[in-house]
Amino acid sequence: MASSAPAVGSSFPTAPGHNSVLAWLPDGKIGFVSFHGPNNFEIYVMNAEGSGLRNLTRELGLDGIPVWSPDGQKIAFTSKRDGTWGSTSSTPTAADSGG
Image (cartoon, one colour):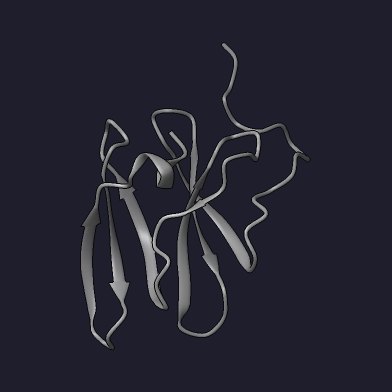
């Protein structure tokens, strides 16, 4: 059975900052959080081979711990944008999800 994971040694997401892979989406995309400096974590998705990088959050603040719905159409994540932690849910647009 072939794996959809990138090969060892393949390039990691090219989003600026420090990145960590958090999830494989049902459609084979990778979801991850990128650290862009104090008080700025962004949630991204991209195709497994590295193309189609999309920032889903685009807000100054701490966005993280994303969880995708089983069909990959919705995302829930924690966010601290106004000084208070909360949870947010979103339906990424086709342009945001690269699909």
